[in-house]
Length: 319
Ligand code: AHR
Image (cartoon, rainbow, N blue to C red; front, side):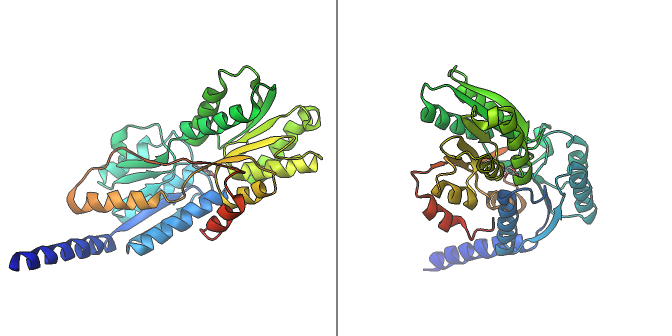
């Protein structure tokens, strides 16, 4: 009996101590900005995850500027936070400030984007496989189009960001063997609806009023929603005259899908902070070092997947 009591109390302590441990944590979060519905959801979920765990989250919005992110990270180091989360707007230019965090013995965790820097400068990166996301999008189009000639226009994410680089790579790999599918135009829409619409308008103008465009591949749903607007204003039917495939699976793309105006999206979870806080708490509690990459899953959704129902299930999740 005594042994059982002992076991029970040590389990209780483990749980309480763990929670108590998290309660002591102060974490700085350098967020890119609020360029897309997905980004807004990631911010909401991160704040919820921190609150649930009693973590004191210091939030800094960089308005999509790396220099603001670097400034925020330096501020967190000066404050002596216990850890730093960064969603890195671009993949390069991080070595110096991450070395400063390392010298201050403050662990850094990357959220949703990768960087080109020595792996010892960050504890782990919680991201999707962005090349795979592009591949899933490309494979869907290959299946949809068959052998018909198809001119694709591509709306790229933020120039120099890991999702823009990798999603382009994955899509190109998927269509490489299909000579009937070509990318005719490709330009950044910076992951925003406004820019996505503007760039799609220019593509339409350049391609016979859009009549020569068979599909638009957008690196995120927000640019796809902007493109859908431009296609409609040109008097064409998005989803039929021009197929629309993108990434994120935000609620609004499912509204468009339900109207037949979008065809496919690859889901990106906004909950990168949950896995990040899990490994951080363990690292702080007993020194367990996590793998350098914690991969989140990517799932394809099409018009066959009850878009209205999916919209209802996602609409209150902070997008
Ligand atoms: O890094 C993830 C990307 O950033 C999302 O696909 C996009 O919506 C956001 O701007």
